[in-house]
Length: 114
Length: 113
Image (cartoon, rainbow over the protein chains, first blue to last red):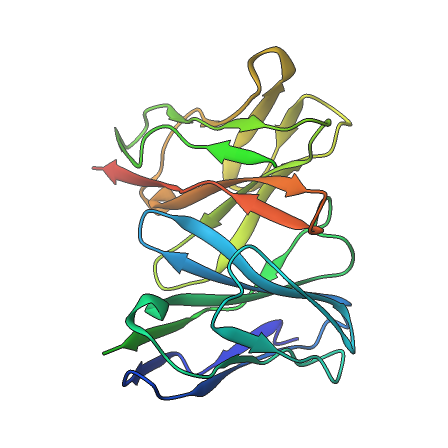
Protein backbone atom coordinates (compact mmCIF):
# COMPACT_ATOMS: atom_id res chain seq x y z
CA UNK A 1 0.00 0.00 0.00
CA UNK A 2 1.60 3.25 -1.14
CA UNK A 3 -1.09 5.38 0.56
CA UNK A 4 -1.24 8.91 -0.86
CA UNK A 5 1.46 9.83 -3.37
CA UNK A 6 2.26 13.26 -4.76
CA UNK A 7 4.47 14.38 -7.62
CA UNK A 8 6.63 16.35 -8.01
CA UNK A 9 8.26 16.89 -4.61
CA UNK A 10 9.69 20.26 -5.58
CA UNK A 11 9.06 22.70 -8.42
CA UNK A 12 10.08 26.20 -9.34
CA UNK A 13 7.80 28.11 -11.70
CA UNK A 14 8.07 31.46 -13.39
CA UNK A 15 5.21 33.93 -13.07
CA UNK A 16 2.50 33.11 -15.60
CA UNK A 17 3.52 29.49 -16.15
CA UNK A 18 1.10 26.66 -15.51
CA UNK A 19 1.51 23.22 -14.02
CA UNK A 20 -0.37 20.27 -12.62
CA UNK A 21 0.31 18.78 -9.22
CA UNK A 22 -0.44 15.09 -9.24
CA UNK A 23 -2.08 13.18 -6.40
CA UNK A 24 -3.03 9.53 -6.27
CA UNK A 25 -4.28 7.18 -3.55
CA UNK A 26 -4.61 3.41 -3.53
CA UNK A 27 -6.93 3.03 -0.52
CA UNK A 28 -10.18 3.28 -2.51
CA UNK A 29 -11.14 6.43 -0.62
CA UNK A 30 -14.05 8.44 -1.94
CA UNK A 31 -13.02 11.73 -0.37
CA UNK A 32 -9.93 13.64 -1.48
CA UNK A 33 -8.63 17.09 -0.56
CA UNK A 34 -6.06 19.66 -1.56
CA UNK A 35 -4.56 21.93 1.07
CA UNK A 36 -1.90 24.58 0.98
CA UNK A 37 0.37 25.26 3.92
CA UNK A 38 1.91 28.69 4.30
CA UNK A 39 4.45 29.40 7.08
CA UNK A 40 2.71 30.07 10.38
CA UNK A 41 -0.72 29.80 8.80
CA UNK A 42 -1.69 26.15 9.16
CA UNK A 43 -3.44 24.37 6.32
CA UNK A 44 -6.05 25.98 4.11
CA UNK A 45 -8.46 23.90 2.05
CA UNK A 46 -8.29 24.64 -1.70
CA UNK A 47 -10.66 22.07 -3.23
CA UNK A 48 -12.18 18.79 -2.26
CA UNK A 49 -13.98 15.92 -3.92
CA UNK A 50 -16.52 13.45 -2.55
CA UNK A 51 -16.21 11.02 -5.46
CA UNK A 52 -15.34 10.67 -9.12
CA UNK A 53 -16.87 13.51 -11.11
CA UNK A 54 -17.74 15.61 -8.04
CA UNK A 55 -15.62 18.50 -6.83
CA UNK A 56 -16.24 21.59 -4.74
CA UNK A 57 -14.42 24.72 -3.65
CA UNK A 58 -12.74 25.06 -0.33
CA UNK A 59 -11.58 28.16 1.50
CA UNK A 60 -8.97 29.40 -1.00
CA UNK A 61 -9.87 28.14 -4.52
CA UNK A 62 -8.90 31.19 -6.61
CA UNK A 63 -6.15 30.48 -9.14
CA UNK A 64 -6.63 26.71 -9.02
CA UNK A 65 -8.67 24.05 -10.78
CA UNK A 66 -9.25 20.38 -10.10
CA UNK A 67 -10.77 17.36 -11.76
CA UNK A 68 -11.68 13.91 -10.51
CA UNK A 69 -12.14 11.46 -13.36
CA UNK A 70 -11.24 8.38 -11.28
CA UNK A 71 -11.45 7.40 -7.62
CA UNK A 72 -7.65 7.19 -7.43
CA UNK A 73 -6.50 10.50 -8.93
CA UNK A 74 -7.12 14.10 -7.96
CA UNK A 75 -4.84 16.50 -9.86
CA UNK A 76 -4.55 20.20 -8.99
CA UNK A 77 -4.00 22.65 -11.83
CA UNK A 78 -2.37 26.09 -11.57
CA UNK A 79 -3.11 28.05 -14.74
CA UNK A 80 -1.23 31.33 -14.32
CA UNK A 81 1.25 30.99 -11.51
CA UNK A 82 1.66 33.95 -9.18
CA UNK A 83 4.14 34.55 -6.32
CA UNK A 84 1.22 34.31 -3.87
CA UNK A 85 0.94 30.64 -4.81
CA UNK A 86 4.36 29.88 -3.37
CA UNK A 87 3.51 27.30 -0.73
CA UNK A 88 3.62 23.66 0.24
CA UNK A 89 0.71 21.70 -1.20
CA UNK A 90 -0.72 18.62 0.48
CA UNK A 91 -3.15 16.14 -0.92
CA UNK A 92 -5.19 14.03 1.48
CA UNK A 93 -7.84 11.35 1.32
CA UNK A 94 -10.35 9.77 3.66
CA UNK A 95 -12.78 6.86 3.52
CA UNK A 96 -15.72 9.05 4.32
CA UNK A 97 -16.58 12.49 5.61
CA UNK A 98 -13.44 14.00 7.11
CA UNK A 99 -15.40 15.28 10.06
CA UNK A 100 -14.86 12.10 12.00
CA UNK A 101 -12.71 10.01 9.75
CA UNK A 102 -8.94 10.10 9.64
CA UNK A 103 -7.42 11.93 6.70
CA UNK A 104 -4.30 10.40 5.15
CA UNK A 105 -1.81 12.90 3.80
CA UNK A 106 0.74 12.74 1.03
CA UNK A 107 4.32 13.98 1.55
CA UNK A 108 3.64 17.34 -0.10
CA UNK A 109 4.84 19.38 -3.07
CA UNK A 110 6.96 22.44 -2.36
CA UNK A 111 6.23 25.05 -5.03
CA UNK A 112 8.11 28.30 -5.54
CA UNK A 113 6.88 30.94 -8.02
CA UNK A 114 9.48 33.53 -9.02
CA UNK B 1 -17.73 29.18 10.84
CA UNK B 2 -15.58 26.99 12.99
CA UNK B 3 -12.13 28.18 14.02
CA UNK B 4 -9.16 26.86 15.95
CA UNK B 5 -6.62 28.79 17.98
CA UNK B 6 -3.32 27.27 19.02
CA UNK B 7 -1.57 29.29 21.69
CA UNK B 8 2.18 29.41 21.18
CA UNK B 9 3.71 28.90 17.76
CA UNK B 10 6.85 27.46 19.38
CA UNK B 11 7.17 25.40 22.55
CA UNK B 12 10.47 24.16 23.93
CA UNK B 13 10.75 21.49 26.64
CA UNK B 14 13.53 19.39 28.08
CA UNK B 15 13.66 15.69 27.42
CA UNK B 16 11.60 13.95 30.11
CA UNK B 17 9.50 17.03 30.88
CA UNK B 18 5.75 17.40 30.49
CA UNK B 19 4.50 18.44 27.08
CA UNK B 20 1.43 20.71 26.97
CA UNK B 21 0.20 22.09 23.65
CA UNK B 22 -2.87 24.29 23.80
CA UNK B 23 -5.86 24.31 21.47
CA UNK B 24 -9.11 26.25 21.75
CA UNK B 25 -11.94 25.98 19.28
CA UNK B 26 -15.11 27.78 18.40
CA UNK B 27 -17.99 25.81 17.08
CA UNK B 28 -21.74 26.33 17.14
CA UNK B 29 -22.38 22.61 17.30
CA UNK B 30 -20.62 19.82 19.20
CA UNK B 31 -17.41 19.38 17.26
CA UNK B 32 -15.16 16.58 16.26
CA UNK B 33 -11.58 17.50 17.19
CA UNK B 34 -8.27 16.18 15.99
CA UNK B 35 -4.55 16.47 16.65
CA UNK B 36 -2.20 15.82 13.76
CA UNK B 37 1.61 15.68 13.85
CA UNK B 38 3.95 16.66 11.04
CA UNK B 39 7.55 15.47 11.16
CA UNK B 40 10.10 17.38 9.06
CA UNK B 41 9.55 17.06 5.31
CA UNK B 42 6.58 14.73 5.76
CA UNK B 43 2.83 14.93 5.48
CA UNK B 44 0.53 15.08 8.49
CA UNK B 45 -0.45 11.98 10.41
CA UNK B 46 -3.23 11.52 12.92
CA UNK B 47 -2.28 11.52 16.62
CA UNK B 48 -5.76 11.26 18.10
CA UNK B 49 -9.36 12.35 17.63
CA UNK B 50 -12.36 13.23 19.77
CA UNK B 51 -15.74 12.13 18.49
CA UNK B 52 -17.84 12.53 21.68
CA UNK B 53 -17.33 9.00 23.00
CA UNK B 54 -15.02 9.95 25.90
CA UNK B 55 -13.62 13.29 27.02
CA UNK B 56 -10.11 11.94 27.59
CA UNK B 57 -8.68 10.62 24.36
CA UNK B 58 -5.52 8.56 24.11
CA UNK B 59 -3.44 8.62 20.97
CA UNK B 60 -0.26 7.21 19.59
CA UNK B 61 3.22 7.70 21.05
CA UNK B 62 1.92 8.34 24.58
CA UNK B 63 -0.05 11.51 23.76
CA UNK B 64 -3.49 12.24 25.09
CA UNK B 65 -5.95 15.12 24.98
CA UNK B 66 -8.90 16.14 27.10
CA UNK B 67 -12.06 17.69 25.69
CA UNK B 68 -13.40 20.42 27.99
CA UNK B 69 -16.64 21.84 26.68
CA UNK B 70 -16.87 24.57 29.35
CA UNK B 71 -13.45 25.89 28.31
CA UNK B 72 -13.84 25.06 24.57
CA UNK B 73 -10.42 23.48 24.79
CA UNK B 74 -8.71 20.33 23.56
CA UNK B 75 -5.16 20.55 24.91
CA UNK B 76 -2.59 17.91 24.00
CA UNK B 77 -0.33 16.45 26.68
CA UNK B 78 2.41 13.89 27.13
CA UNK B 79 3.90 13.15 30.57
CA UNK B 80 7.50 12.78 29.42
CA UNK B 81 8.93 14.28 26.24
CA UNK B 82 11.23 12.30 24.00
CA UNK B 83 13.64 13.68 21.42
CA UNK B 84 11.60 11.96 18.71
CA UNK B 85 8.56 14.11 19.64
CA UNK B 86 10.15 17.15 18.00
CA UNK B 87 7.70 18.06 15.25
CA UNK B 88 4.90 20.45 14.37
CA UNK B 89 1.50 19.74 15.89
CA UNK B 90 -1.81 20.85 14.43
CA UNK B 91 -5.19 20.97 16.10
CA UNK B 92 -8.20 20.72 13.79
CA UNK B 93 -11.96 20.96 14.11
CA UNK B 94 -14.60 19.50 11.86
CA UNK B 95 -16.11 21.88 9.35
CA UNK B 96 -19.63 20.62 8.81
CA UNK B 97 -20.18 22.97 5.89
CA UNK B 98 -17.35 21.75 3.69
CA UNK B 99 -17.08 18.21 4.99
CA UNK B 100 -13.44 18.90 5.75
CA UNK B 101 -11.26 20.10 8.62
CA UNK B 102 -10.30 23.57 9.75
CA UNK B 103 -6.74 23.57 11.02
CA UNK B 104 -5.01 25.74 13.58
CA UNK B 105 -1.79 27.51 12.69
CA UNK B 106 0.36 24.85 14.36
CA UNK B 107 2.78 24.62 17.27
CA UNK B 108 6.37 23.62 16.70
CA UNK B 109 7.65 21.47 19.57
CA UNK B 110 11.36 21.50 20.30
CA UNK B 111 12.83 18.96 22.73
CA UNK B 112 16.12 19.87 24.37
CA UNK B 113 18.53 17.13 25.53
